[in-house]
View 1: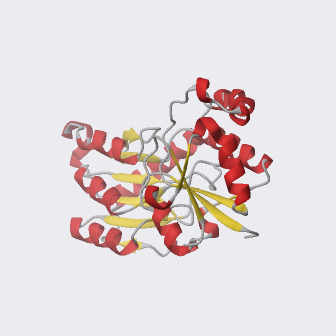
View 2: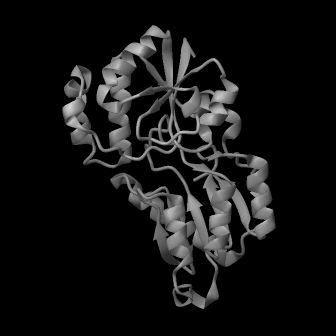
Length: 269
């Protein structure tokens, strides 16, 4: 990296892990958006994004990482500063696109201010799921078929910027991850009646990036809570895309899979 780092810290554990690794980074949080790093951050308003740009420049920031879960916040146009007024039409237009289209626009906005937007892998490559990841029992032949089916569904949805995860049992799609996130779709699957799982097959969950997805702002993340949700949904295991999915607290994640007696493995798609 070329200069001081700023961490745009949203919800979840990932911003904390980044800050522990780069303790001298400038931490930025936004009003109305949850973040565990709130007490050690500079807090800014999205409506006054020009103030954020000025503060980052004053702190000597060159590199920026967006980390954590970010919901689309409600903005009050009456509070827009001049900088936000200038970019608001582009952001409003991008909001009608999928997540990747919106996030690419945000990257463009920051880079136009002279910042370099980095990805988590530039700071914590150790968090990525490697192809060697294999925890728990081997998938059965029927589960391998469900893995292939879920992977194909995700590949077909990728061009329209939908879905980073898919649950399949006996070839039947039980749920597709959309804007509500992994926990929501797995909760939905957990409530699915047994008759939709053909032959009593448990099924699998596959999590992968979309084709052409910009990983600097939207790299899929799993952790022990994800594994617990997979088990609660009655699934036999989870497959993640090798090299393109992050694992938070690897030891606890592995322990959760072993405790639930489900598999967790990584594949190159």
